[in-house]
Length: 149
Image 1 (cartoon, rainbow, N blue to C red):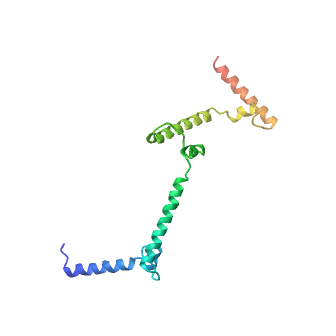
Image 2: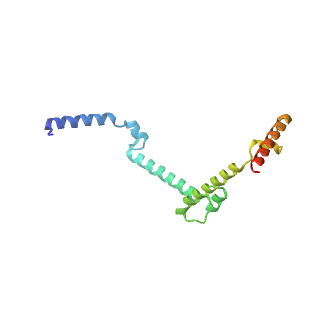
Image 3: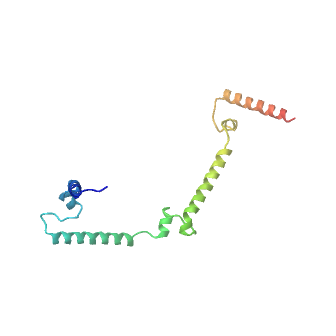
């Protein structure tokens, strides 16, 4: 499709007007440090920015020099003590978590039920209820042994 030069110029003007409406105000540019404030000379603004940058640089250098050693971070449980290469540490951690999850699932599967806890006097219940539970359990065991005879 061919666009006439008049339409192209009209589109350019429309786009330019839209971009001018959307641009940031001078105050926003000053707040972001892009432009110097109106009341201060540009050279003064540049000097202030370089001083702020130098102060930030000094602060970061101080933080880097005073950061704790690796052994201290391991002692504080921030880093893991591992002999594996850094590229393998993530895989090692996943494996360790999977083993832990399997171990916990196995322990949960083997934990005693409420009836067993009542029989071993671990779970407190009323004495009449306890006798009923033990009696029912003995009936079940008797039926089970009769089936195997």
